[in-house]
Length: 120
Image (cartoon, rainbow, N blue to C red; front, side):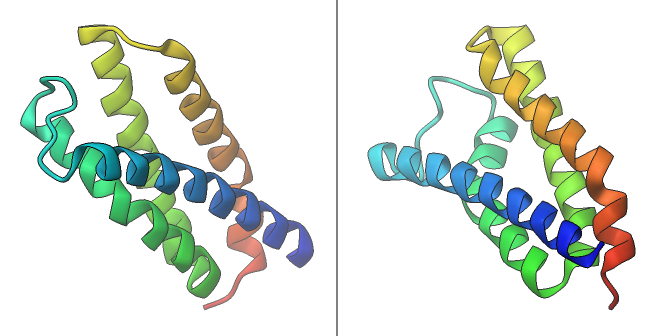
């Protein structure tokens, strides 16, 4: 069970690493002040903050798994909620949000394995 939980955490960390890369590319190309094509300030601040939050949670999944999985659920639920709202309000590429919904479902269905296999 411990190895399986570690494998799940590695999947979590890998997905967060890809997300971090995506957010970093946006910052490199557009800078910290970009408004993402006219999005509301809350969405701008949230999306920009993910450049720091995603890697922080990924690192904590290695160092402090239990608090990190709670943070991951909060992070992904808020990300999915925000991005779903953006798609419904402004349009966009639905497959990107669908991928996040799938990852959130994966996290919610596997979190118990990680929780029970880690002790802090």
